[in-house]
Image 1: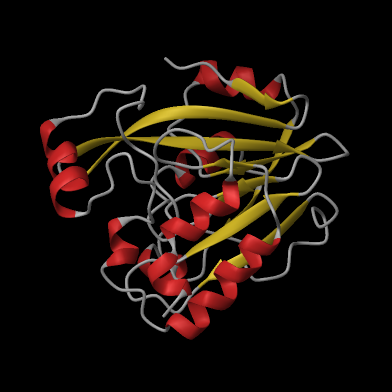
Image 2: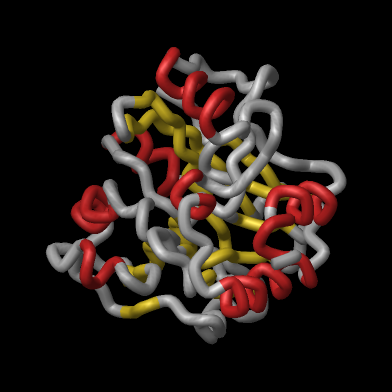
Length: 235
């Protein structure tokens, strides 16, 4: 069992969880954001048990559950069962992919008024196979992504199987080279639309990145992003 880790003092917590996808053992990262009034946003929810719920409840009251990407939705219903009064927000497209998930809102390019003083956001759309909503925590200048950037390599602190190493090293050349998820690379789609969203992210001038898969980025953020998104940004 992982422990909740305070990432930005009294503002952001992160929690690493295991998930199996495409025959590979991956690791995801849930982010918890505390608003000024003490309410909590659960970003990219993980599987939850009573112990984790107890730890979360010590931080604040869960009011919002966010499924930020079309590949990040597996455990939304787990959190809904534990927090039936919380409002659920879905990345566009998930309402069709997961019609079984009950929700109140679809995320857009403008932040909800209840967190607009803390967070900015943008929908990355126009791509062929995968969409997501990027978030920016303004007080700490922290960018929060799920699949727009993955950072797995020699310094990855989690065990990686042979299948993951093969795909990341041989096929996608992503080992030690942070890049967008393979689903992005296989189909950037309408690059003119995608570039608008990516340009907004770069314009935030973040100082660190919380990402779902791999090690956090805490230096030279825009350089890393520019390199990772070079093909689409220079198309």
